[in-house]
Image (cartoon, rainbow, N blue to C red; front, side, top):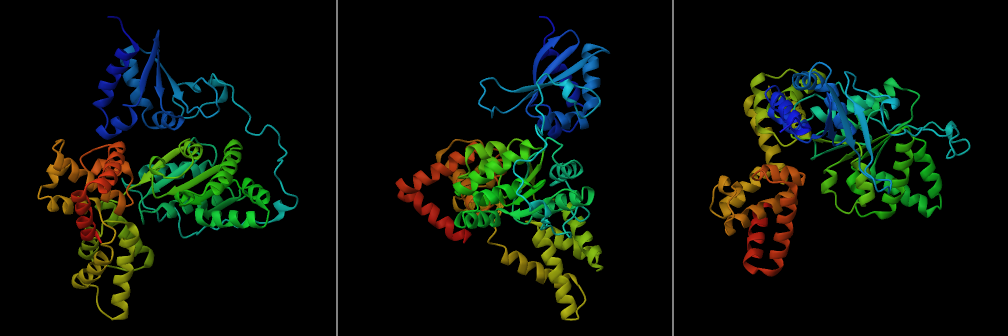
Length: 474
């Protein structure tokens, strides 16, 4: 059998696999599909423009070496970017980009015509006199990149945020959607991007607003019959940051108006930054056309910080506040408060306050008292690990049995209940719940929740399981 695109790419992959971390290989190389081979040029399909940019920035040398081994010194790699079909045309929209040592591509290198971002310079949406109004950015300068510490849990989101701040509207991270649980730094990162942009580009109009306030403003504009003025105002913003976009769920009027604003900003090369407590795939009651736009750019997750990152956060907080604390106490707090950064910082503030008000030295005993109160007060925010343990104990099995691949009915039901309660009592995404409960995907979790709902209505014994377990979590 002759040399094919598949065989060449498979050989490249085996070389690449030996030279990078398994997780990086899974994320960045497994989704690539070989398409065709002509002479010394290999065409591969990648899922998005962001994907292509990441490969070119981080793995260009590795790709070059592996391809040169297979196809010789003149080897070329051509990327085919599969774009989502959003314009109603029947053919999938693809861009072909020759690989090079650059991470950006000029319009001439693309096979598809590039539409001018500003077909006319006159802005038809300008309201007379509105340019004279100074739009306050509503940003908090205390939330900046200097005090947003990097760790494994936030590296992708932070790097993407920096890229956007350096070149707002000029990267493929548009929109940039930052998602994750409570107190993990979504709002902080959103403000940090805005603060950095204002610093680098003072002439640009940046606006930060919560989705809740945006909705209130929209309702007010409908009452006062100024809906068009509301839309026109938002279309003048250069960088729009909307916090807690999941709040738009079920609000079809607000979603509709945001859809028009988003389209206008995006088409004019303006930057949109969104935050949410869940990934687009898990958002309920958000219109499909809006969800598809959320997926145009990059969705970056903020995860729970690991031990090392928690230590760094605490030390940084103490340094900023000019407070010294023994290492063993910092270590104790970091080991015992794991759920989120807000609680971590809250515990330190509480510790400092207790110490200064009561004129007590900060001791391990005092730290234990403060941490105990925090852990007790936040028991309501149940972790997925805790849910699995409670469900396993209730059904008298090990957590490992609950997570196993077995299809025995009572174990399957226990696993489905764990997934159901994880969705109900935590802010974790479906994908995150699935990966923690036996490495399942988000579709399995969705199916589990539907099954539990159905059985609750039809099976008395199963209803009792739900009631008993609910009491244990409340």
